[in-house]
Image 1: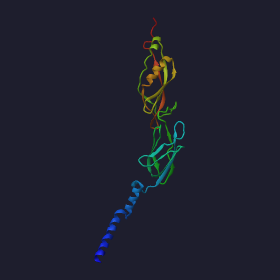
Image 2 (image 1 turned 90 degrees about the horizontal axis):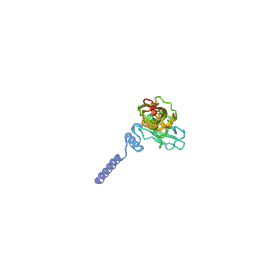
Image 3 (image 1 turned 90 degrees about the vertical axis):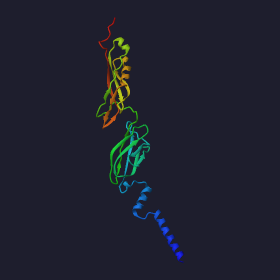
Image 4 (image 1 turned 30 degrees about the horizontal axis):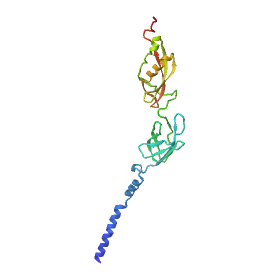
Length: 237
């Protein structure tokens, strides 16, 4: 009888030890277990959750952009825009964030210092996205114009030299956000013989980019290329 009672006590203790190892009993352990299951960061626990919504459109056409990815940088929160360009991101902890938009064939765009307050539902950033390598409008109002860092003089066409011809060609140059010429076109010319030489020279120029709202932007600039013979036109024999 004593042996049976002793055996029962040992088995009961073993079951209690085994139970303590698999099932947390204190509140802290339970909270840690729930957090690991939900995947939430412990720092986010206790913070009020917020929601943002907004739209992504093409900067030039104002058409909605579907399948654009909107991300709250530094977090796991993101969304993809619908066919009408709209998005919604829920359960974001309150705080100060960067919101980034990305879409195929478009330059990515980031909104800085976006604040989410306690239990708020607010309109998120309206993203105007620019297509990669898209020509800018003929006129863009900027805070700072591009400045040439490299200038190349055009070669004097031999036919014009022999004819003693002089003149000026006005070239419009598309300068991208890195300050490089992407395209050049003649907008006015005194003589067609000078056009190609002026275009070739224009594409070799380099610039500091134009600036709008503290960001580099693409613009068109007009530059005159003058063709003048040194010492005047050659004398006829």
